[in-house]
Image (cartoon, rainbow, N blue to C red; front, side, top):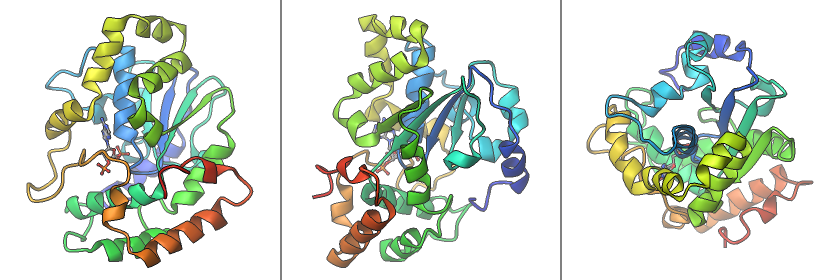
Length: 272
Ligand code: A3P
C-alpha cells in the first residue's frame, strides 16, 4: 500500500459488500485506471463532463484508500476504483468488473514517474529508473507484483460480469472501446451511446488532451517540476528507458509468470 494510505481504509475496504449495481474498475497501477473511470462516468452521464468543482476521485473513489463507508455513501450505480487482486476484490455475481491491463514495459515507466512525483507518499524524488526497475521486477512496489494482479484477472476474463480491456486497444480505437464498455454496462448505456452526439462527447472528454487539462484540478499534489499524473499517454515509451539487459529480464519474467496462459499474445505487436 502507498505510505499515505491509511491502513484502516484498506482493512475496511476489504469488507465492503459489493452491490448488484456496482461497477468496479480493477487494474494494476498505471494501466489506465483513471481513463476508464472517467469513460464509465461519462457514459453514465450521457457524455456530460465533471463540473469544475468535481474530481474523478470523489465521484469514483479508490476502495482500499477510502474504505467502505465512503463507498456506501455514493449514489448507485457506484463506480469503484480498485487495485486489489481478484481474490480480494469484493464480489457480487451481478456487479460488473472492468479490468484494464497494460503491457508491463510501459507500466513500469509510468509507475516510475508516478512514484517520483508523489513526494508526500514516497521518498523517491531523486530515484532513477534503474532503481525503480529493480523494485518492480521484484514485485516490491505498491500493490505488489504486476503479474500476480494480471494473471488471475485474466483467468476470469470470460466471466459474464468481467470485461477485460487493454490500454493499448483503447489507445488504438477509443470509440470501439467506449462502445464495448457501454454495451457491457447494460442496455440503457448501450442505447445512449448509439446517439452520435453522446459518443462524440464521451470521446472528447476522455481524450488525453481533455483529461490532461482536467487533471490540474484532480491531482493538485504533484510538484510543478515533476511529470503530471496524466503524463504522456503513449504506447512504447519504454524503449526510451530500458537497457537491453532490463528488456531481457522483464521478457523472461513475463514468460515465466504467464506460462500456461495465452497472455503472450496480448501485446505481441507492442513488445518488439
Ligand atoms: P503514462 O504515465 O504512460 O502517460 P492510471 O490512471 O492507472 O494511474 O494510469 C495512468 C496512465 O494512463 C498514465 O500513463 C496516463 O498518462 C495514462 N492516461 C490517463 N488518461 C489517459 C487518456 N485519456 N488517454 C491515454 N492515456 C491516458
